[in-house]
Amino acid sequence: MAKFTSESKERVKDAADILEIVSAYTDLQQRGQDFWGNCPFHDERTPSFKVNPRDKLYYCFGCEASGDVFSFVEEKEGLTFPEAVESLAERFGVEIQREDEDPRAEERRRRRAKLWELLERTAKYYERFLWESPKAKKARAYLMDRGLSEDILRRFGVGMAPSPWDQVLTGSQRAGFKVDELLAAGLVQKGRQGGHYDRFRNRITFPIRDERGRVLGFGARALSPDSKPKYLNSPEGELYRKSNTLYGIDRARGPIAKVRRAIVVEGYTDVLALHQAGVEEAVAIMGTAITPEQLKILGSVTSDIVLALDPDTSGQEAMVRTQQVAMKQGMRIRVAEMPEGVDPADLFQTRSGEEFDSAIEASRSLPTFQVHAARKRHTLSSAEDRDQFLMEVRPMLATIPGTAERAELVRTIVDWMDSSQGLVERWLNEDVESASSVSSEGVVEPPRSTQGAAGRMAQEGQKRRPSLSPRETRERALMSMCIAQPKVGQRFVHQLTEGHLSPSGAAVLSWLKEHLDDPLAGLPENDQEFRSLVASLVMRAETEPATESAMQLNFDLLEQQRLEDGIAAAQKKGDYEVSTRLSRERAQLTDRIAHAGVVG
Image 1 (cartoon, one colour):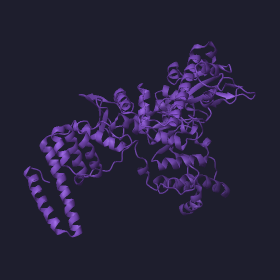
Image 2 (cartoon, helix red, strand yellow; image 1 turned 60 degrees about the horizontal axis):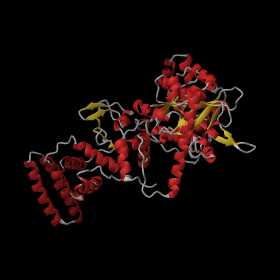
Image 3 (cartoon, rainbow, N blue to C red; image 1 turned 30 degrees about the vertical axis):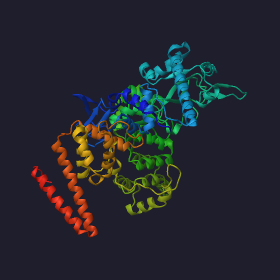
């Protein structure tokens, strides 16, 4: 993909409101010119996350998450740098240009943009028809009878496709769209006798959007009992992939990050009912089983997933695949058992929402739920029935090897079967490898995760950064002070060498030698880690005591480390002349540090 022009990136950065973006994930309070809140990248009780709205930067003094407005969107929305720029440009109405874009790539990009425009235009048309046409009275009545308010319906852009066969077809053509674009967007289909007609007719429409709020397609519910199927989705195409999509993710992403949990339901109206009730972390899978791709989308903002649907309808194999993927990604999946024959929307319409809350609180891990669900299907009164039961639970138990949860479930099964634990373990281990070895891609492989439960249940977005070494701590302190006082800092920046620094510090030093007056200008697009490190130094520069004596002290400590490294290397080579010379230099330096009142 061609790079964006520097001017485009600067326009996007200037237009982007980092406070609005970050506030979707954590509450911010102003202190002076900056804003503080609990870090959205790790769990904490005392706010240590600082946002600088002037330079569009953030920094956590706890986990050291850092960066600019682009890297925040990259991290929290799971986007690449170009995607983050595009997302912010769309959100804040900035036109962007690219440098020497490949004509074919440009044509693909323009086509996708045209399809998104067509789908958004159609969504608005359906929405207007629902609220303004007398012919939509029945649809409005149905939605109101479901307990859904006009506010929530408008918030999600719910609409209605009219009955005539060519309303979208002819209207879109008049607006300049081609039939092949209408086909690609899934809005029309070919007739048996030739020609084309609208795919959605006399149906309530639910726009399906991606994380960035772009319409990918529609789900449509029939109003007439004679219309089949009851629900009709857009066909798979250039934009819409059912397995890659979660209904409501554009509105739920921020709430999911704030409450550190996602609730997954099956239907569109379930999502609407939950959001209306204030449960805004709800999304729908639009199917019977959550997919690895959908888990990946949710995994970018949380590690805690609650399924408020009937996993039995998904099939055992699908649930095993789900658990395998979740284990690999460090996610925890729980199941909230709904009353039989009742979906979440019904709970809020005909019963108390407290019943739903109770179901969520009582949710059990997916393996535990599946084992107990299998027990309900078997009497265990015969050898054949016990064999069938064990065959059902083996694959799921194989996804959690070596865990306390598995051990507890085995003890429970022993009690149910009134048998010895050794015998049950042997039965469960029979063919367990073959039973659990199908990956989400259909490739045969053994279970990969053998770590304990605590290790797999990492909190949402937790940054597992290694602790900084003393050298890294000193070099970052010195470079942040050099940024704060560039006139004095120039001397130290040019005195430092790679021998003083860690690999990451050496890369930043090379950058600061050319950009000390404006370290954020022109940072490389394709190295998010480097951009975040520079941003963290700029943020620290606002609070780091930046005196010449403090700079000198940190430089001397880095020099001391450099000398110690040189002594060790010389001794390893047997070069005692160099070792002795460096030892004398180290002794002199140590005296100077001690004279400054600091124990080195």
